[in-house]
Amino acid sequence: MMLSAVMEDYLKAIYVLHAEADGNVKTSDIATQLDVKPPTVTSMLKKLAEKNLVNHEPYQGVELTPTGESVALEVIRHHRLLEAYLTEELGYDWSEVHDEADRLEHHVSETFIDRLATRLDEPRVDPHGDPIPSADLDPVEDPSGTALIDFSVDETVIIQRVRNQDPEILRYLEAHGIKPGTRVTIKEVTPIGMISIQPHSYETIVSLPTSVARSIWANQTGEASTSVP
Amino acid sequence: MMLSAVMEDYLKAIYVLHAEADGNVKTSDIATQLDVKPPTVTSMLKKLAEKNLVNHEPYQGVELTPTGESVALEVIRHHRLLEAYLTEELGYDWSEVHDEADRLEHHVSETFIDRLATRLDEPRVDPHGDPIPSADLDPVEDPSGTALIDFSVDETVIIQRVRNQDPEILRYLEAHGIKPGTRVTIKEVTPIGMISIQPHSYETIVSLPTSVARSIWANQTGEASTSVP
DNA sequence: TGAGTAAATTAGAAACGCCTAATTCTTATA
DNA sequence: TATAAGAATTAGGCGTTTCTAATTTACTCA
Ligand SMILES: [Mn+2]
Ligand SMILES: [Mn+2]
Ligand SMILES: [Mn+2]
Ligand SMILES: [Mn+2]
Image 1 (spheres, rainbow over the protein chains, first blue to last red):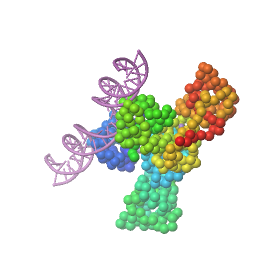
Image 2: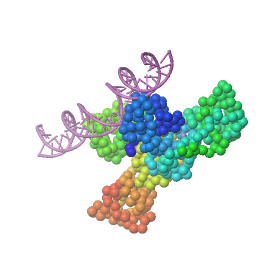
Image 3: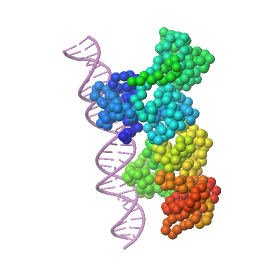
């Protein structure tokens, strides 16, 4: 199947939106995600439906077909392997990798990706803790995680995943000892939308707005505990 | 300057055609190089002239402006650094790198290229022996080389550059001990369009059609002897 | 249950990069 | 130097991806 980079981005967006807010994905959600206007989405959905990559019930939302999901998983595999490669081999910071991977994901060959995966020793997660789909694109589900904000004071947990692509926020978090694999203790949860934590690799206590704390997932082991179907 | 991948390919094609057959570049040459029809070239030349990237005298051919030449050199730098990287770090064969680099050259950032160059220790040539423009895009000229076919019988020379992108031919040459850096002795030049050479790293004599021998450049040192303006 | 509103779709247009067919220009040669 | 061949350009059109403006549909709540 010969798809344009733009079509691949639509399929990836639909996959991501479906995973994080289940039920059918709405036209306006896709428009927001891809920074285009809703009529643009409608016309693209028609083309994708034509190619049997999505099922589109007008006015009722859209879902990926099995084929569409495979394409999305492949693009996500490219994206996350590229991110892992950029940090591990080219000295990129985890705040810099997203935009580069978002372009390259559409232009690297299967050969390139296979050799990258081999060279990196088949990594299972990217620098943000996001799981990397396997080469056979198994229907692996995203790991279930608990947001930092849902732990109690005095609990000690290991950061597992940071679901945020804002470079400034990522740089701030890293500078304060917060990234996948680091251990932190919850110190205080305020009623005014702030959470204070003690990263073990960092001297002082760090305060985060709940909006940010909601995007940081953690658990007791640091492992990605997959919710197998 | 925000240029499309297609525009970059036109500028690169004009640069390459100008270098290998001097004088103004013709519409039909570009059409052949990029595998499009002449009217497509004409309409693109208008757009490039509009952006001051080329000077186009209708019916008289086209030339790059200084700006256009800079863009072309940048794309060529991307292409050749990517080729070097693919062979040196990802285990690609020199017959496989061209197509991959031809796509990626338009989608990698300056940051990516800078880090690649640093990691490879600022290589000066790519796997085919083609010179890599420096980061400041100096007006470096292509090295002057002597085609294998222009040496005399019994001369021993070092292969410097192989100006051929056909994967089958490249695989054949490598399998028979012919690639940049290898030493060969000219054994026979036949009147029927064949040249026989003895690669020093290979047991038996290899015969090549003159069309292929013309694309293989060699000299006594193996160095790229630049013809400085 | 019947507005009224918010979301989605349709209509129409533009920029891009490509094509074929028709026309115009250049140049070589008779 | 006139003409004919060949090269290049113009004319007109198509598919892609985007937009704004107009219209249609679905859903909420009075
Ligand atoms: Mn993308
Ligand atoms: Mn990521
Ligand atoms: Mn290219
Ligand atoms: Mn090369």
